[in-house]
Image (cartoon, rainbow, N blue to C red):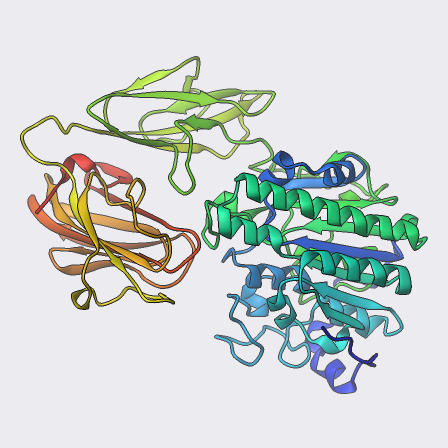
Length: 554
């Protein structure tokens, strides 16, 4: 914990920041005298809606909000919190991982702020209003690596979420800061420990809601509630026990604006990005928004502001249809059905619209089949479903992969797998020739879903089998994994997705002739979330899970 001495903007910092100080427009009149940004690490829209969150729901009922704001890629905490405070994405501010340190980066910032940092909301406000009181109170210690602390009057790392909230409450009452950023981290801890969407995760969200209520009450006690706007947001969502991938569940975040100056009860049907938060805070306070920032103020949240004309509506304003059997963690809807057909159902989670679907991998149109009841699936099928409102597509299409395996014949189906224990910490695939397996068996598919593993972390699995190819041509293979994975065909490396990361997808291509080809997939998990999915596409075969009917043990 530290409270640095009050600093004055340095001439050198101002000179260095000139490149980023060119503004979109002159400073406008302030709309609020105080802005408090509350960031809840790992808070998903699902958490807001399903957990016990009376404070957040009250702020939404009396404020403006969206549950479809978006973070940046990669969906890591470092990259996204840096984007929140810097008004731009990783390609501008340079923070691409949680390990980022100023002076140790892959590429420099696009403009020079101070001390090697991109100009943050803290520097922008202090440069323009050096007499203002600016604070940063954060639970995740890594948040403190993302900005130049010389531009913050009160800079404190809370040891836990309760202390973080208590420090914020005391600071608001004592100093009535013009700008304050508060960061809570326990929701993300719960997501990694027990999984997003679990009872423990929702309990952590409920606790964060209570702490947000304490901070809101502090503005009342300090006598500044009517002059304060509170912005509540997050850095990423999650799938299973992880994040860092490219799914909508990881990318979408809540964004809530609350205060007397804010439009009450408005669900914002417009694109909102995480780097718009800094621009909105600066705009509310009447500060100039630097040209270097890519974010734009979310002006329709304010009373009296015009809603911009939009030629294109937000793609996720309506929830996508739910294909059942539903997704389970990173496993998409559908599933594997052995020696039996599947029963497809599609549910509309919205109170309006109709569902149209296809069974041939095409994107549904207004002319596609109208869903009216369960459908029997008797062969491998890619299902796509879209919500239509007033005859127009109104949601992101949902996709389900149904695999129907005929294992009744004389030939064995599946691939051999072997399980290995790895030393801590595991960050890359090991040399398996030096290891002894601790378990083995047969898997119908190239996935860890359904496998009984001796532990969750620091573990690896190797799959070996034969893949039957019936048509010659170029085949694309893909591995989606958390953490790393590799795929080999006939001993040749085709896909390299190694490394310590969330669910990301890597691809590779190879020409194959008809017949059997040896296939090998290696996978490991160092910690946190775990997933492996193997896909292919080729002549007459759309991208899908590698067909289990074509796999046999060696």
